[in-house]
Image (cartoon, rainbow, N blue to C red; front, side, top):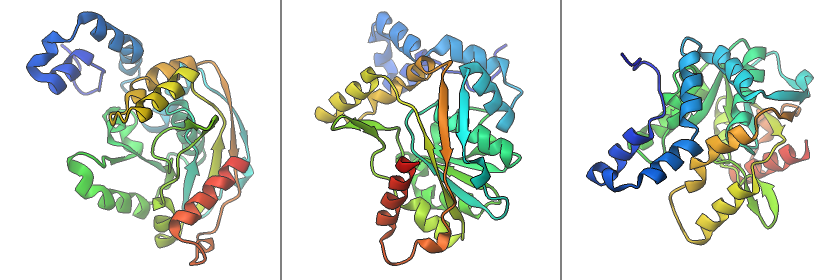
Length: 272
């Protein structure tokens, strides 16, 4: 009997849900290709193997599975008192989220929360560390309430203010503009902001695909389908993580708008 308590990737089921009766007309070679690029069999085998692990233990298992090595600079900048908002660039879309959660979760004894796309909530092991955000579906009305709950919690917050992983614009791989939420909420809840820079990149194929979709005005984030494949391409690598000095919440005064302050912190991150 299948264990329904853990989330497994099932492309056939997703196609049936999304395409209904038309699903049977999707060519089998395309279904097989989708299963291959999302690494369905490998990821499901891993999720089954670690089904009893949650929180930081789950992240540690992910680190082992992906064989991620880290060179962390600035650990002395991690505050020992008070609650913080950790904000980072988002170059990869996989390893960066796992690695930051692992480093900070270990340091703060699991007292961390991600503000993440609600898709990740399906990962049983990650769920205890997540505040789900779904800006498009039925939860969009609850978006402010969920963010509020996260910032009012007694956990440190980890955010990727760009919302999606980095893209290549004018030949430079960087995050898109950062959203201001981390500024306004950190001031409201008196959390200092800690800038973090994660060094890494995805493949040229990924950036080219994202730019082609943008050029043709394709609204569906096709590039996201390839993030699992990018994650596997980035296995067995060493990444540099730089943690900057905390920025006191009082810094974010009326001299700039919250959007301008978000851009200011983004610039600081890229200088780390």
